[in-house]
Image 1: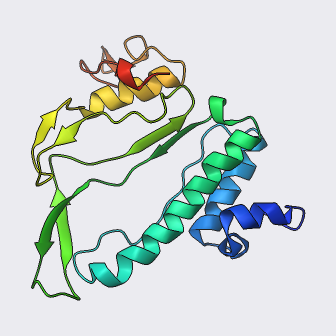
Image 2: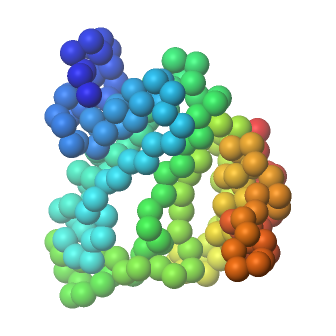
Length: 192
């Protein structure tokens, strides 16, 4: 956790916030440091995304924090030659509607949970860059093209990590189970 030997170019990339313990930029920089030291899996959290109100006030600063740090992580991994071997997955707990929740005013509104669709992005580690897969209608409510079931996402992630999800099983109560249950297909258009 000692950042004293990080060059100034690191903080130019991640932002000065990376020097502040607990900031998203600091956590992202720590993730890179763990990865370059051989840690196989790192998970980063950014709290406070459950905006059911005060969206105009809260969301812009959260997006700024996350956008810069995520961009910095991808660029940092590239310049260190680690990008091709590191799978970066960015997602939330579920989707959000475009519909306002609560009283609608110009300065205070929010978004409700979305049970049908959500967005995430994958980078590095065998993912084809610049690919958009899946689509919703104009209201971001119904899936209109290339739906991805959670089992398909898991099968694809496992494939990118070098596992055949159909052979990765565990025995429980006399039955062999897969992590993707009886479902899941690798989403080939996402692969580099």
